[in-house]
Image 1 (cartoon, rainbow, N blue to C red):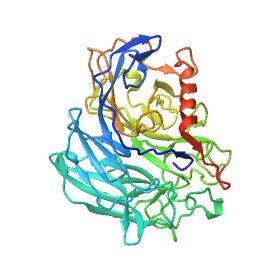
Image 2: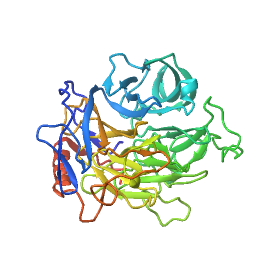
Image 3: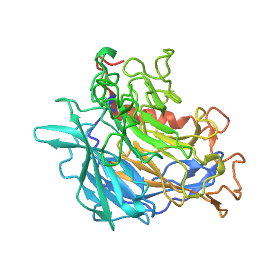
Length: 443
């Protein structure tokens, strides 16, 4: 992310995996009992840790059969099967370069996985004396994968550059592969020097390619002289995640610099304005964020996100097609309901440096903790489930008795807010472990 330095984040050691967490409801939130390793979730939900032992976890996705693939920046892909971590990795990228923010950062499943078994990876790899970001494809065979096929090689990373690699990766409803390429600039450049605003290179952009790496003829800059034809949208700093709603809307997690975090709505030729602007802008040349929040109460980086649209939807109807996202530093999961992508709902708190969210086919929400701030640096996966005997099918029929009376979350700014001491405790933890990097060239 580039604006924080974490003291010794990858130290060794592992914490014993606890038993499923019991919770007691206090007001809006259900609190884990003392000694449990768990997030704080709304009344009516339970949270439990299902696996631990991940080294530098970076991304996660669910397969159609319910297995969860957990990506490590080191190049290792682990498998959770029926909530059990398998000892044999799904795949290992042998030449991964995980220096700084480099590494394997994105993972996506092909919509045709049931027949083609394709999984895509976004990884920094060493290539001779240099490194570059590469899109790879592997083919699942049982709980492991075959050798890699290179789909796309991006240009070499500038020597010494360690930050802002991006990592967003998703196959869209048009069966095209969308790639969030970071700006690959450690410091904030002037707009006239910015990779993100320069059409001649792919950095700081959303790229759109065929799943075999070819450039679609209908790309917005395919016929623009001097432009990289893979470009779909520009003006991004660190597009860490890409997701699509049930209606096909692209939602982008843009990790900001010193002030703002953004959820952007992707569109062809959109220009989100980095490095000229960060957060909302009055400049009509730029596309404003769909939603943005400031670095307050310990927030620092929007990382993991997912759309809640599983085949078996068990959460209350309020969260159908909701966009769940998590902040790395304040440890809170929030949701932007489909009815209002600009008004977030508080959902869970107490996560430790979370980097990814995903939804299983049976409707559970999984999160991936790095455990840098208060844990031991060994990554873990948690699972949030809704407790009801009622079942909501994908058609939306049926009813759920909602203990909150309104849909299962707590509106930010309302009387149902979590205890305000939680952000304070988060800030205290951050103060002990993180120091802000104030470079002269950054805001």
